[in-house]
Length: 67
Image (tube, rainbow, N blue to C red; front, top):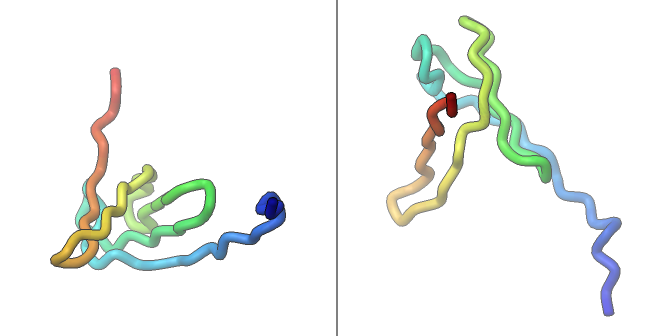
């Protein structure tokens, strides 16, 4: 049995051109073992974009707020 509790998952930083759903500015995104997080430097929007790999490339979606 292999102990995988000490395996390090790399953290990656990306910028999504015009990726902010609020103002349309470039959106810096960090992908880590904890998930995907984005914070817009222009308007301050923050959230968790959902990244999905498709046959056409990467698809980025945003879940709406739950009230």
